[in-house]
Length: 469
Image 1: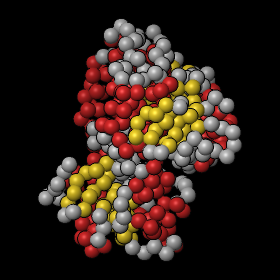
Image 2 (image 1 turned 180 degrees about the horizontal axis):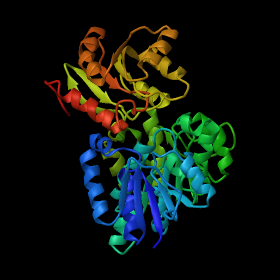
Image 3 (image 1 turned 90 degrees about the vertical axis):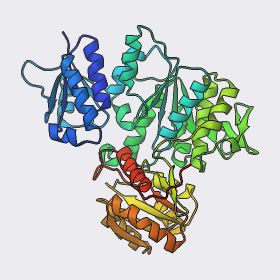
Image 4 (image 1 turned 120 degrees about the vertical axis):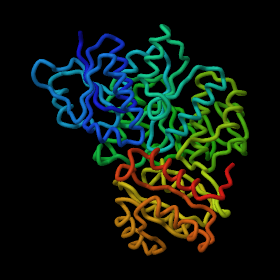
């Protein structure tokens, strides 16, 4: 019986362990967290229940543990959850010993590679684009679930396929982070999409070049490639991905200075794809040019896949957006509260600022990331009447704002303090919006950006006198 070791007691790791177990592997799942730490997580009850199910199915679960490569229990395969660094010593050692080491996405690919995939990657815009593509395909009658960083774990779809004894999915729509791509060397979607490329996760990837090459490696393996031509970095580096790239641009057909053609673009207020008028831009309700860029790459993918124009129009007209990305929460005393917790870097937070009406009160902070904050602070100076700083990064952000001669900030430490103070400050400053757009990871106080956004939403809704849409 082959031996498999799965790292990470999260949704992806649990799904990978179940899949291997179903296929007759002797499976061990390890996680560095203690039982107490697992129980304290926001989804602790679900994780504990899943742990019990795994044990009952014959999976060994080891908490407060690491991968071991000694003795007689050396695994034949190691499956890594997305949050586990690819360069930790045990994984380097495993690869040096020629132990097959892959990510959860790659494991799912082994069982689902007869189905066409769409792989969506990039720094920002992945989640919205993935959700929008899934909506369009489903409106067109395709069985096209989303997975990866959104929706299902990919191995959950593999299990469904095995349980049904048929590959009944028409498409797999996968949001893929750099972490997932670097551990999935064989993954080769039919269509690959690159949304944006700005510095992110440099604590893990070290340089922007390394980060880009990981993203680009996925596109190189895709049969068809779609790139957002409005991204400044990708305008230049995307040329390396071949002459067959399909470019999109909100700036029109002739947005490039060279001989590249733009196949999907906006002209006279209409979306045009491969020479065909698709729909008026006004039908799409999500604010911001960045969301229009996401829409264009989604339409490009739909047309390549043969989705009917009527389904495309229906889907983009009704698409509500995604949680935690410029998500309207409520209105209190005439002030809108907007949850942009998914803005975990400077570029995403800058987009958030520029997408809502000014003046606004900004809540920012968390676990800081490497990156260039210049444009973000420029937007703060233009749009923010006040900034409330929370979390580990608050003192650093305060210094950065002060250095740029912006002084309308307070270090308030916690989300509770920020929300409770925001109303009075917004009234005083005549602000129309309170925006949570942290420009930071969440891991100083929260398990995920979703948990952070959920907490913000709960605090806002608890204020009373709420007018909800």
